[in-house]
Amino acid sequence: MRNVLLLIQRFFNLILFVFLEVICFMLLTHARTLQGDDVLSAANTVVGLIYEKRSALIYYISLDKMNDSLLNENVRLHKALASLTAKDTVFDLHSKLPTILASDTGSTASKAANKDTTSKHTLEYAEYEYKTAMVINNSTNNVNNYITINRGSNSGIAKGMSVITGTGLVGWVEHVSAHYATVLSIMSKQQVVSARLKDGTYGFSYWDNENPTQFVMKDMPQQIKVKPGDSVFTTSYSRLFPPDILLGTVIKSVFNKHNGYYQLYLKPSVNFRNLQYVYVVQNKMIPERKQLEDSSAKK
Amino acid sequence: MNPYIKNLFRFVIILAIQVLLLGNITLYLLPQPAGSLFIPLIYPLFILMLPFETPVWILLFLGFFMGAAVDAFYTTGGMHAAAAVLIAYLRTNVLQTLMPHKLDEYAGLQPSVKNMGWLPFLVYAAFLILIHHIFFFTLESWSFSSFPTLALKIGASLGTSMLFVVAYALLFTKQYAAR
Image (cartoon, rainbow over all chains, first blue to last red; front, side, top):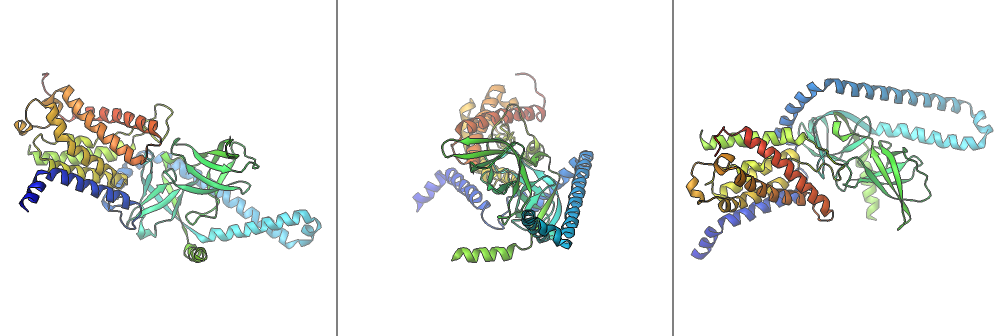
């Protein structure tokens, strides 16, 4: 017994060192998986408060820029609203005049398909609820990048909700406290987003961890026609984020001789460095969809 | 000033500089892969500037608290804490190698440019911060698959960190006559 005590006394520092390192690694491995284990996250109330004070100062200085971006956002929304109402009127006109549509079978089919997608589209919008939030801290330098927003569980924010801006997809909520939440940006290691091209070809877009202003879509089939400047949107396959959110535009497509697929490089539509206001999107139908999909996956 | 209060102040000041100022600095000099290569981390300086005779176990605990605090702000799990505990453990041996007398003889003093001279202090700081960066960035990327990028990142960040460490050492220590 005495020898054991002597041993501990002699190697006390080493034992303490190993002990603390083990704690660090436990925090590290559990931080991303354990629910509610966000003691060491920027969603922590103290940390959130400090970040909020700092951003209050920075926001005062950059009010003019913020105002400008909000104006742009308003313009974009007005335009979107206008185009949506215009579509509805056209669609109503056609439905009232079936004889005109019936005269040309080819266009009827396409218009019927069009009609389907428009009505489905409006339904999908009703599924989602949008909440505004202000970005109070933002990192873009790391392998995993987090954004802290000033809304938490008190405002109805929950883990897994997606976060978008006026220009595109930002990420999804990872940790939540009463008044703050941290958002894991899609510009993080191994964050894969289901994406589609204009013609509906879908694939997966991810950050290749190499160029901060570039996403990659691997294994796109040969027959698709892609031009630089084509837009890429999110799909409805994901439970995390709503469909048809702009992800980015194609910069170039590279043909991979080894497997016969195209590799597309995208320019993200969001500038992660100047995020100011974001929208947190809640999909109200997710619990039902999850239950259904999980029960069918079991069989 | 009481060394306890002094080091408490230093803890708060260095943490504030690290998370409120340096966290927002993004340097782009070359066309770079993997986010920013130049990530200034100044908080190891807190561990480096604790008094000479501080026992290792206190160093370890303080390093852990400093790293955990930075982790909380940067949402990095325990990566900063692990790296900080490592250099807190190595600090005493490195100092002993660099200093001409036993560490007990420097009672009431702290490692600084004033007490060590320019070259020993820079060697001491650069060596421990290098170890810290190697450990931290390897942990962050969790692979050696892109080794050149990792090495570049460690080197570039070491340079940037040392810049801020020297700036801090010049700004926040009392003026002294040339030795």
